[in-house]
Image (cartoon, rainbow, N blue to C red; front, side, top):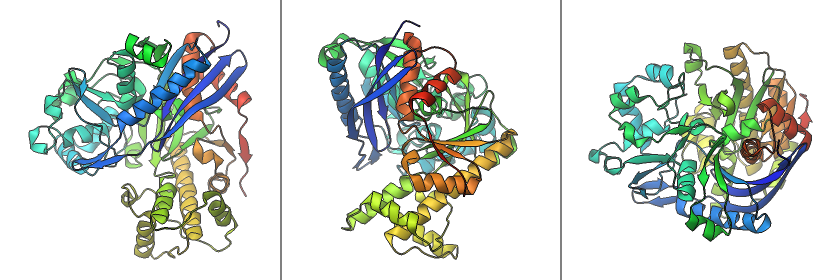
Length: 475
């Protein structure tokens, strides 16, 4: 190792973004949040989009502060949610990236499966069925007959973190962990599946060269460096936010399951090889790329989106919501509440979440929540139940004996969720760190720079020492 140093993580989540400084050295891991900004989608006549220009502006503001604080900043890494992309022509973005919750994807699912059945897709890409996977989005806008038409004019496609990397460096790349969520990557070779692209009529030239996490992409362009007031390398990290988060789970991978809980709840285990059995496909478990060639074998649960969208609905109706008080009241609720299927597709789209939960309960002869407190308790109970089921399924599909469940991300602060998950899975839950994604981003950069060393296990030991988790035993 070459001593200690400082790197910056740009961490873009589905509801907010952050710029965080990380100081890393031998037995040292410290973080400082410099900027936090909302990530608010925009609805235009053609659908729901991410406001990527505003996100980039906010990220640049945070990085400007980073250079003021640390003029010798060593590098910058970017992570974000998966699957969404921008189409470019001669380096210019053709439109704002669509949001994965946009309704256009249904046509893409139908078009894809008409050519390549899902069972065959799973054998090739290892991905669970999610209607917004990149392959379905691209098929939804294939050709001018789609009414969208950008695909026919595009000469490259960049996932969100790769787009920001391009704007910072001028380099067109595709980081492998995020590429693994597109449905276009061969799960065995880790390379683009050009044969699949040909079958689907998607141009292989759209896809940039793949790079691994821990690759130095290049320096900031002179124009960006001048704007930010300093220069640094941009490093490819685990640019899928869950890939970075799993780096920072302080676990023994052989005996632990993890839950990366924010807008989504990603529940799974870390493996050396993918699991492509019929049982894994039927259970809708995915095989996504991780840092150092690991496999993130996991299942998506709807996550705290259920709660945040409910709060948004109540506030839109004029109610004043104090979420900490609401959670405390939900924890004290003695009466039983409905436990619904948190994975039901009706909960995917934006809208009146309490009304949809009530509809589900009526359809399934469950007691319908009435007050916000009852809804919140029902949501948390249902998430804990879904998490526990996914942990048990992961163990069964892999033959693993799970002894501990780790919850990282924003959900690790939700004491009710952590305790109810421990109760339902019947295992200890270790909660934290909250900023696991940014920590993983920082550690991959730090290892490349020589500020940290060793395997993922060594990096996780550093996390455990710096951010001791909180333990919840089952009751």
